[in-house]
Amino acid sequence: MIILDGKKVALKRKNELALKISEYQNKGLRKPKLVVIMVGNDPASEVYVSHKIKIANQVGINSELLRFNYDIKKEELYNKINELNSDINIDGILLQLPLPDDFIEEDYLQAITPLKDVDGFHYINQGKMLQGYDTTFPCTPLGIINLLEEFSIDVKNKDITLIGTSNIVGKPLGMMLLNKQATVTMCNKNTKDIKKHTVEADIIISATGKQFIISEDMIKNDAIVIDVGIIRDPATNKLVGDVDFDNVKLKASYITPVPGGVGPMTVITLMENTFNLYEKQLNKIK
Image (cartoon, rainbow, N blue to C red; front, side, top):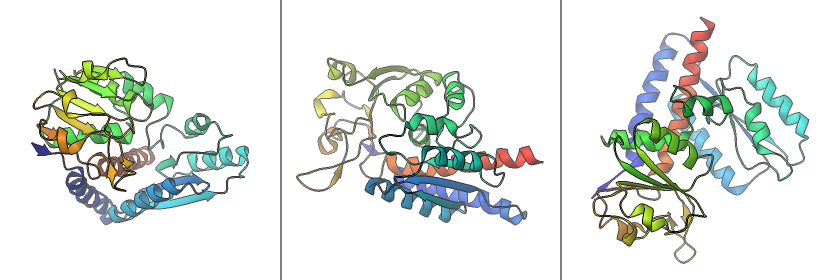
């Protein structure tokens, strides 16, 4: 059994990205810039955003946090996004979710221009992804694919079962895997018998946020297991995932840990997406 060490891979990619950015600085060019918009003070969002900004600074990306109170007017948020869209010195715009309950999140995600949509959520970027064109891909799905590739795991001709079909992870990841010639089964909360779909799968990817939904009896010997979930176990107060790691690892050939698997790959992919948008912006200005 081999641990798919996302933390180690992310560190390697972080160093590579920092080198690329420094090469642009040596040419006298500006740094890439990422702007994060946060409304309110959701505790989980506070943690995620502070970590993203820390990593951005470490690789040489200028990062700015625009923080708004919960009582911000809807029009004011639209206007701020439009202002950022037109600023040629900003490469990536990230809208940290959740927004207040009375905001329609999708409206604001779509207000971000596809040229600065660092999360890959805009309909234009999603449409390009669906049809297999190069675009800005969502960070967690792309991070998972990059992690597999770092371990020379080819998904072509593999039977892959995905549990969880969110717009952020499951759906885009399913499309990306299909475009890489995998055979993909997608399970959701209404799937009658998830085990029926996992027990013969070569690769199982679970992204539900439900503790230990994937048990040892649900996988075949030497399956590859990717755990996207992260939950705090109420009994031990430790972070765990969708997968019963201690038991499943006895049968798996490769498995991601929680924490230290998919999470670090998501963050470094956000930085790589920012850099890619930065390069496109520079080429457009030339």
